[in-house]
Length: 411
Ligand SMILES: *Cc1c(COP(=O)(O)O)cnc(C)c1O
Image (cartoon, rainbow, N blue to C red):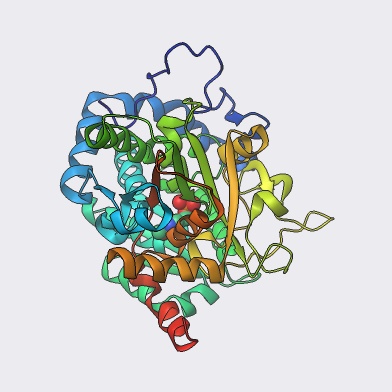
Protein backbone atom coordinates (compact mmCIF):
# COMPACT_ATOMS: atom_id res chain seq x y z
CA UNK A 1 0.00 0.00 0.00
CA UNK A 2 1.20 3.50 -0.70
CA UNK A 3 1.31 6.42 1.68
CA UNK A 4 0.31 8.75 -1.11
CA UNK A 5 -2.31 6.61 -2.76
CA UNK A 6 -5.30 8.38 -4.21
CA UNK A 7 -6.77 5.47 -6.11
CA UNK A 8 -8.76 4.03 -3.20
CA UNK A 9 -12.44 4.87 -3.36
CA UNK A 10 -15.02 3.89 -0.82
CA UNK A 11 -17.31 1.14 -1.95
CA UNK A 12 -20.55 2.19 -3.56
CA UNK A 13 -20.06 5.96 -3.28
CA UNK A 14 -20.69 7.93 -6.43
CA UNK A 15 -20.40 11.32 -4.73
CA UNK A 16 -17.32 13.45 -5.39
CA UNK A 17 -14.53 12.72 -2.95
CA UNK A 18 -13.72 15.17 -0.17
CA UNK A 19 -10.12 14.09 -0.56
CA UNK A 20 -9.01 15.74 -3.74
CA UNK A 21 -9.55 19.26 -5.05
CA UNK A 22 -10.65 19.93 -8.64
CA UNK A 23 -8.14 20.66 -11.40
CA UNK A 24 -7.85 24.30 -10.29
CA UNK A 25 -7.25 23.27 -6.70
CA UNK A 26 -10.70 24.04 -5.30
CA UNK A 27 -12.39 22.18 -2.47
CA UNK A 28 -15.93 23.45 -2.94
CA UNK A 29 -15.50 27.21 -3.14
CA UNK A 30 -12.16 27.28 -1.31
CA UNK A 31 -8.63 26.84 -2.60
CA UNK A 32 -7.17 27.89 -5.95
CA UNK A 33 -3.90 29.70 -6.55
CA UNK A 34 -3.96 33.45 -5.90
CA UNK A 35 -0.38 34.39 -6.63
CA UNK A 36 1.53 37.25 -8.18
CA UNK A 37 2.33 36.88 -11.89
CA UNK A 38 6.01 36.53 -11.05
CA UNK A 39 5.36 33.28 -9.16
CA UNK A 40 3.39 31.56 -11.93
CA UNK A 41 6.35 29.73 -13.37
CA UNK A 42 7.41 28.15 -10.05
CA UNK A 43 3.92 27.15 -8.97
CA UNK A 44 3.01 25.89 -12.43
CA UNK A 45 6.11 23.68 -12.55
CA UNK A 46 5.11 22.17 -9.23
CA UNK A 47 1.47 21.73 -10.28
CA UNK A 48 2.31 19.90 -13.48
CA UNK A 49 4.94 17.63 -11.89
CA UNK A 50 3.94 16.77 -8.32
CA UNK A 51 1.57 13.86 -8.95
CA UNK A 52 3.72 12.23 -11.58
CA UNK A 53 6.74 12.41 -9.25
CA UNK A 54 4.85 11.27 -6.15
CA UNK A 55 3.40 8.27 -7.99
CA UNK A 56 6.69 7.07 -9.46
CA UNK A 57 7.87 3.78 -7.92
CA UNK A 58 11.37 5.10 -7.14
CA UNK A 59 9.93 8.08 -5.25
CA UNK A 60 7.49 5.93 -3.28
CA UNK A 61 10.23 3.51 -2.33
CA UNK A 62 12.61 6.20 -1.08
CA UNK A 63 9.80 8.05 0.74
CA UNK A 64 8.60 4.91 2.48
CA UNK A 65 12.12 3.83 3.43
CA UNK A 66 12.86 7.24 4.98
CA UNK A 67 9.54 7.26 6.83
CA UNK A 68 10.46 3.89 8.30
CA UNK A 69 14.17 4.28 9.03
CA UNK A 70 14.55 8.02 9.59
CA UNK A 71 11.20 9.25 10.89
CA UNK A 72 10.41 6.04 12.79
CA UNK A 73 7.14 5.01 11.14
CA UNK A 74 4.72 3.46 11.56
CA UNK A 75 4.05 5.40 14.76
CA UNK A 76 2.12 3.36 17.34
CA UNK A 77 -1.63 3.48 17.72
CA UNK A 78 -1.81 3.25 21.50
CA UNK A 79 -4.90 2.21 23.44
CA UNK A 80 -4.94 4.68 26.33
CA UNK A 81 -6.63 2.57 29.02
CA UNK A 82 -6.69 5.05 31.90
CA UNK A 83 -7.82 7.90 29.68
CA UNK A 84 -10.48 5.60 28.19
CA UNK A 85 -11.74 4.69 31.68
CA UNK A 86 -12.11 8.36 32.56
CA UNK A 87 -14.39 8.97 29.56
CA UNK A 88 -16.13 5.56 29.63
CA UNK A 89 -15.14 4.82 26.05
CA UNK A 90 -12.26 3.41 24.04
CA UNK A 91 -9.58 5.97 23.14
CA UNK A 92 -6.58 5.35 20.91
CA UNK A 93 -3.74 7.85 20.57
CA UNK A 94 -1.96 8.08 17.23
CA UNK A 95 1.57 8.75 18.43
CA UNK A 96 2.93 11.36 16.02
CA UNK A 97 4.79 12.69 19.05
CA UNK A 98 7.19 9.78 18.57
CA UNK A 99 8.26 10.91 15.09
CA UNK A 100 11.85 12.10 14.68
CA UNK A 101 11.90 15.82 15.61
CA UNK A 102 8.87 15.35 17.84
CA UNK A 103 5.87 15.98 15.60
CA UNK A 104 4.06 15.08 12.39
CA UNK A 105 5.60 17.97 10.41
CA UNK A 106 8.55 15.86 9.27
CA UNK A 107 6.24 13.54 7.24
CA UNK A 108 5.72 16.47 4.91
CA UNK A 109 9.23 17.90 4.84
CA UNK A 110 10.70 14.48 3.99
CA UNK A 111 8.23 14.22 1.10
CA UNK A 112 8.92 17.72 -0.20
CA UNK A 113 12.71 17.37 -0.04
CA UNK A 114 12.51 14.26 -2.24
CA UNK A 115 10.26 16.16 -4.61
CA UNK A 116 12.68 19.11 -4.70
CA UNK A 117 15.55 16.78 -5.56
CA UNK A 118 13.62 15.37 -8.48
CA UNK A 119 12.78 18.87 -9.69
CA UNK A 120 16.53 19.57 -9.70
CA UNK A 121 16.31 22.19 -6.92
CA UNK A 122 19.37 22.43 -4.68
CA UNK A 123 18.31 25.39 -2.56
CA UNK A 124 15.45 25.15 -0.06
CA UNK A 125 13.57 28.03 1.51
CA UNK A 126 10.90 27.98 4.20
CA UNK A 127 9.19 30.37 6.57
CA UNK A 128 8.49 29.60 10.17
CA UNK A 129 6.63 31.17 13.08
CA UNK A 130 7.47 29.28 16.24
CA UNK A 131 10.26 27.44 14.48
CA UNK A 132 8.80 23.92 14.38
CA UNK A 133 8.46 23.87 10.59
CA UNK A 134 11.87 25.53 10.27
CA UNK A 135 13.44 22.75 12.33
CA UNK A 136 11.68 20.03 10.32
CA UNK A 137 12.91 21.68 7.10
CA UNK A 138 16.47 22.21 8.34
CA UNK A 139 16.50 18.54 9.39
CA UNK A 140 15.71 17.15 5.94
CA UNK A 141 18.07 19.63 4.25
CA UNK A 142 20.88 18.27 6.43
CA UNK A 143 19.78 14.76 5.52
CA UNK A 144 20.11 15.57 1.83
CA UNK A 145 22.98 18.05 1.96
CA UNK A 146 20.89 20.86 0.48
CA UNK A 147 21.22 24.56 1.23
CA UNK A 148 18.53 25.72 3.68
CA UNK A 149 17.30 29.24 4.26
CA UNK A 150 14.60 29.86 6.84
CA UNK A 151 12.81 33.20 7.07
CA UNK A 152 11.59 34.09 10.52
CA UNK A 153 10.14 37.26 12.02
CA UNK A 154 12.64 39.19 14.13
CA UNK A 155 10.23 39.07 17.06
CA UNK A 156 9.81 35.29 16.73
CA UNK A 157 13.59 34.82 16.59
CA UNK A 158 13.85 36.56 19.94
CA UNK A 159 11.11 34.50 21.61
CA UNK A 160 11.93 31.08 20.09
CA UNK A 161 15.65 30.87 20.86
CA UNK A 162 15.88 27.06 21.27
CA UNK A 163 14.40 26.39 17.80
CA UNK A 164 16.63 29.04 16.23
CA UNK A 165 19.63 27.28 17.81
CA UNK A 166 18.41 23.91 16.49
CA UNK A 167 18.07 25.24 12.94
CA UNK A 168 21.56 26.75 13.05
CA UNK A 169 23.06 23.56 14.46
CA UNK A 170 21.43 21.68 11.57
CA UNK A 171 23.20 23.99 9.14
CA UNK A 172 20.34 26.31 8.15
CA UNK A 173 20.66 30.02 7.66
CA UNK A 174 17.99 31.91 9.62
CA UNK A 175 17.13 35.26 8.06
CA UNK A 176 15.18 37.75 10.18
CA UNK A 177 12.11 39.43 8.67
CA UNK A 178 12.29 42.98 9.93
CA UNK A 179 9.22 44.55 8.33
CA UNK A 180 5.65 44.94 9.64
CA UNK A 181 4.84 43.08 12.85
CA UNK A 182 8.12 41.09 12.49
CA UNK A 183 6.23 37.78 12.78
CA UNK A 184 5.06 34.90 10.58
CA UNK A 185 3.27 36.90 7.88
CA UNK A 186 6.32 39.09 7.33
CA UNK A 187 8.51 35.97 7.13
CA UNK A 188 6.09 34.57 4.52
CA UNK A 189 6.40 37.73 2.44
CA UNK A 190 10.20 37.47 2.54
CA UNK A 191 10.07 33.80 1.46
CA UNK A 192 7.79 34.64 -1.48
CA UNK A 193 10.10 37.48 -2.53
CA UNK A 194 13.06 35.13 -2.41
CA UNK A 195 11.26 32.50 -4.51
CA UNK A 196 10.39 35.09 -7.15
CA UNK A 197 14.07 36.08 -7.33
CA UNK A 198 15.34 32.48 -7.49
CA UNK A 199 12.90 30.55 -9.67
CA UNK A 200 15.36 28.07 -11.18
CA UNK A 201 17.24 26.48 -8.31
CA UNK A 202 14.88 26.96 -5.34
CA UNK A 203 12.00 25.00 -3.84
CA UNK A 204 9.75 26.59 -1.21
CA UNK A 205 8.68 24.07 1.44
CA UNK A 206 5.33 25.08 2.93
CA UNK A 207 4.57 23.43 6.27
CA UNK A 208 0.82 22.95 6.34
CA UNK A 209 -2.17 22.36 4.04
CA UNK A 210 -2.18 26.05 3.09
CA UNK A 211 -0.76 28.12 0.24
CA UNK A 212 -1.62 28.07 -3.47
CA UNK A 213 -2.63 24.88 -5.27
CA UNK A 214 -0.98 22.31 -5.38
CA UNK A 215 0.42 22.78 -1.85
CA UNK A 216 -2.73 21.90 0.15
CA UNK A 217 -3.26 18.68 -1.82
CA UNK A 218 0.43 17.79 -1.84
CA UNK A 219 0.86 18.28 1.92
CA UNK A 220 -2.39 16.38 2.66
CA UNK A 221 -1.11 13.43 0.60
CA UNK A 222 2.21 13.40 2.47
CA UNK A 223 0.42 13.53 5.83
CA UNK A 224 -2.17 10.93 4.77
CA UNK A 225 0.22 8.24 5.96
CA UNK A 226 -1.25 8.96 9.42
CA UNK A 227 -4.77 7.74 8.57
CA UNK A 228 -3.46 4.98 6.33
CA UNK A 229 -1.63 3.54 9.33
CA UNK A 230 -4.61 4.11 11.65
CA UNK A 231 -6.84 1.95 9.43
CA UNK A 232 -4.39 -0.94 9.39
CA UNK A 233 -3.59 -0.69 13.09
CA UNK A 234 -7.20 -0.36 14.19
CA UNK A 235 -8.18 -3.38 12.14
CA UNK A 236 -5.44 -5.41 13.78
CA UNK A 237 -6.32 -4.21 17.30
CA UNK A 238 -10.10 -4.30 17.18
CA UNK A 239 -11.09 -6.20 14.04
CA UNK A 240 -12.70 -2.99 12.74
CA UNK A 241 -10.99 -0.72 10.25
CA UNK A 242 -13.10 2.35 11.02
CA UNK A 243 -13.14 4.38 14.21
CA UNK A 244 -16.35 6.14 15.24
CA UNK A 245 -14.52 9.44 15.84
CA UNK A 246 -11.22 10.97 14.73
CA UNK A 247 -10.14 14.06 16.66
CA UNK A 248 -7.29 16.39 15.68
CA UNK A 249 -6.22 19.95 16.42
CA UNK A 250 -6.13 22.47 13.58
CA UNK A 251 -3.66 25.28 13.01
CA UNK A 252 -3.24 25.31 9.25
CA UNK A 253 -4.68 21.81 9.31
CA UNK A 254 -1.97 19.36 8.21
CA UNK A 255 -2.09 16.84 11.08
CA UNK A 256 -5.89 16.91 10.90
CA UNK A 257 -5.84 16.46 7.11
CA UNK A 258 -3.50 13.50 7.54
CA UNK A 259 -5.57 11.92 10.32
CA UNK A 260 -8.86 12.45 8.42
CA UNK A 261 -7.66 11.66 4.89
CA UNK A 262 -8.57 7.98 4.51
CA UNK A 263 -11.81 8.51 6.45
CA UNK A 264 -13.04 11.58 4.57
CA UNK A 265 -15.31 9.54 2.32
CA UNK A 266 -16.41 7.13 5.09
CA UNK A 267 -19.62 8.78 6.24
CA UNK A 268 -19.90 6.76 9.43
CA UNK A 269 -16.69 8.27 10.81
CA UNK A 270 -17.22 11.49 12.73
CA UNK A 271 -14.39 13.91 12.02
CA UNK A 272 -13.73 16.44 14.75
CA UNK A 273 -11.38 19.38 14.22
CA UNK A 274 -10.38 21.42 17.26
CA UNK A 275 -9.33 25.03 16.93
CA UNK A 276 -7.65 27.24 19.51
CA UNK A 277 -10.11 29.53 21.29
CA UNK A 278 -7.25 31.33 23.08
CA UNK A 279 -8.75 33.41 25.90
CA UNK A 280 -12.26 32.66 24.56
CA UNK A 281 -14.14 33.15 21.28
CA UNK A 282 -15.39 36.63 22.13
CA UNK A 283 -12.23 37.81 23.92
CA UNK A 284 -10.52 39.30 20.87
CA UNK A 285 -7.64 36.95 21.63
CA UNK A 286 -8.44 33.75 19.77
CA UNK A 287 -7.40 31.70 16.75
CA UNK A 288 -10.67 29.86 16.02
CA UNK A 289 -10.79 30.67 12.32
CA UNK A 290 -13.99 28.85 11.32
CA UNK A 291 -15.90 30.55 14.15
CA UNK A 292 -14.53 34.05 13.61
CA UNK A 293 -13.37 34.12 9.99
CA UNK A 294 -14.95 35.08 6.69
CA UNK A 295 -14.03 34.04 3.14
CA UNK A 296 -10.88 35.79 1.97
CA UNK A 297 -7.51 35.19 0.37
CA UNK A 298 -4.52 34.43 2.59
CA UNK A 299 -1.10 33.05 1.56
CA UNK A 300 -2.19 32.23 -1.96
CA UNK A 301 -5.52 30.49 -1.54
CA UNK A 302 -9.14 31.36 -0.88
CA UNK A 303 -10.27 30.16 2.50
CA UNK A 304 -11.71 31.37 5.78
CA UNK A 305 -9.63 34.16 7.27
CA UNK A 306 -9.87 36.12 10.51
CA UNK A 307 -10.17 39.70 9.31
CA UNK A 308 -11.61 43.09 10.13
CA UNK A 309 -14.64 44.56 8.33
CA UNK A 310 -12.32 46.15 5.77
CA UNK A 311 -10.35 42.96 5.18
CA UNK A 312 -7.26 43.51 7.35
CA UNK A 313 -5.98 40.20 8.72
CA UNK A 314 -6.51 40.06 12.48
CA UNK A 315 -3.61 39.12 14.76
CA UNK A 316 -4.60 35.75 16.27
CA UNK A 317 -3.82 34.45 19.74
CA UNK A 318 -3.25 30.97 21.09
CA UNK A 319 -1.08 29.69 23.93
CA UNK A 320 0.25 27.15 21.41
CA UNK A 321 2.46 28.61 18.71
CA UNK A 322 1.44 25.96 16.16
CA UNK A 323 -2.25 26.98 16.31
CA UNK A 324 -1.61 30.71 16.36
CA UNK A 325 -2.61 31.29 12.73
CA UNK A 326 -5.39 33.55 11.33
CA UNK A 327 -6.35 31.18 8.50
CA UNK A 328 -7.09 27.53 7.84
CA UNK A 329 -6.40 25.26 4.87
CA UNK A 330 -9.04 25.28 2.10
CA UNK A 331 -9.86 21.59 2.62
CA UNK A 332 -10.89 22.40 6.19
CA UNK A 333 -12.89 25.47 5.17
CA UNK A 334 -14.83 23.13 2.88
CA UNK A 335 -15.22 20.44 5.56
CA UNK A 336 -16.61 23.15 7.81
CA UNK A 337 -19.01 24.69 5.27
CA UNK A 338 -20.26 21.33 4.02
CA UNK A 339 -20.75 20.03 7.55
CA UNK A 340 -18.58 16.95 6.86
CA UNK A 341 -16.45 17.73 9.89
CA UNK A 342 -17.46 19.15 13.27
CA UNK A 343 -15.40 22.13 14.41
CA UNK A 344 -14.96 22.55 18.15
CA UNK A 345 -12.58 24.81 20.03
CA UNK A 346 -10.67 24.75 23.30
CA UNK A 347 -9.30 27.66 25.30
CA UNK A 348 -5.69 28.06 26.47
CA UNK A 349 -6.78 27.01 29.97
CA UNK A 350 -8.70 23.95 28.76
CA UNK A 351 -5.71 22.83 26.70
CA UNK A 352 -3.36 23.25 29.67
CA UNK A 353 -5.67 21.16 31.89
CA UNK A 354 -5.89 18.45 29.22
CA UNK A 355 -2.08 18.36 28.91
CA UNK A 356 -1.62 17.93 32.67
CA UNK A 357 -4.40 15.34 32.68
CA UNK A 358 -2.75 13.18 30.01
CA UNK A 359 0.65 13.44 31.68
CA UNK A 360 -0.74 12.06 34.94
CA UNK A 361 -3.08 9.46 33.39
CA UNK A 362 -0.85 8.01 30.70
CA UNK A 363 2.72 9.19 31.30
CA UNK A 364 2.70 11.17 28.05
CA UNK A 365 3.43 14.90 27.96
CA UNK A 366 1.71 16.20 24.82
CA UNK A 367 2.47 19.28 22.74
CA UNK A 368 0.16 22.17 23.63
CA UNK A 369 -1.35 21.96 20.13
CA UNK A 370 -2.26 18.29 20.61
CA UNK A 371 -3.67 19.12 24.06
CA UNK A 372 -6.45 21.08 22.30
CA UNK A 373 -7.59 17.85 20.62
CA UNK A 374 -7.57 16.09 24.02
CA UNK A 375 -9.59 18.93 25.58
CA UNK A 376 -12.41 18.27 23.10
CA UNK A 377 -13.17 14.98 24.91
CA UNK A 378 -15.02 17.04 27.54
CA UNK A 379 -17.34 18.43 24.85
CA UNK A 380 -18.44 15.10 23.35
CA UNK A 381 -20.86 12.56 24.70
CA UNK A 382 -19.09 9.28 24.12
CA UNK A 383 -20.10 5.79 25.19
CA UNK A 384 -18.42 2.41 25.64
CA UNK A 385 -19.24 1.35 22.08
CA UNK A 386 -17.28 4.20 20.54
CA UNK A 387 -13.77 3.79 19.13
CA UNK A 388 -12.12 7.19 19.31
CA UNK A 389 -8.79 8.04 17.68
CA UNK A 390 -7.00 11.21 18.75
CA UNK A 391 -4.08 12.46 16.73
CA UNK A 392 -1.33 13.27 19.21
CA UNK A 393 0.45 15.57 16.79
CA UNK A 394 3.54 16.29 18.87
CA UNK A 395 5.38 15.98 22.16
CA UNK A 396 5.51 18.56 24.90
CA UNK A 397 9.25 19.09 25.40
CA UNK A 398 9.12 22.34 23.46
CA UNK A 399 6.31 23.61 25.72
CA UNK A 400 8.01 22.96 29.04
CA UNK A 401 8.49 26.66 29.84
CA UNK A 402 4.73 27.22 29.40
CA UNK A 403 3.93 24.17 31.54
CA UNK A 404 6.33 25.38 34.26
CA UNK A 405 4.64 28.77 34.23
CA UNK A 406 1.23 27.07 34.54
CA UNK A 407 2.40 25.02 37.53
CA UNK A 408 3.67 28.19 39.23
CA UNK A 409 0.18 29.54 38.66
CA UNK A 410 -1.26 26.57 40.56
CA UNK A 411 -2.25 24.09 37.82
C1 LIG B 1 2.67 22.87 13.78
C2 LIG B 1 1.95 21.98 14.71
C3 LIG B 1 0.54 21.85 14.67
C4 LIG B 1 -0.34 22.69 13.81
O1 LIG B 1 -0.15 22.52 12.45
P1 LIG B 1 -1.20 21.74 11.54
O2 LIG B 1 -0.76 22.03 10.17
O3 LIG B 1 -2.57 22.27 11.85
O4 LIG B 1 -1.11 20.31 11.90
C5 LIG B 1 -0.05 20.94 15.53
N1 LIG B 1 0.67 20.19 16.39
C6 LIG B 1 2.02 20.29 16.46
C7 LIG B 1 2.75 19.45 17.44
C8 LIG B 1 2.70 21.18 15.63
O5 LIG B 1 4.04 21.27 15.71
